[in-house]
Image: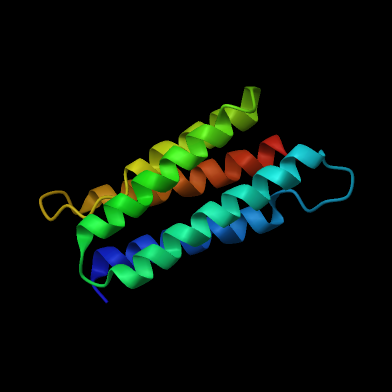
Length: 125
């Protein structure tokens, strides 16, 4: 497994872990549960695509780009903090690029994705 692929899979896994607890508390809005479920499904798809991409960086970029589009579509249904967090997540997914000339780009994307997961938790609490 290549280092960029390992990093990308770790990013998706950490983000998923954050979202599964984001909206689980009693009394939270139903929309938050729906968002968490939909985002988890989208990120599971990215993780699966990354795992099967092996050494093909373009496959990782394609999967993350498609996921970003899905998250943007989801964000359009919401407003306020939740929309902002979903937009941030889409931007983070768009930043998942295996670029040998800029190895820190993946780590920056990881930070952005984790930050957006935290924002979704905050918007849903």
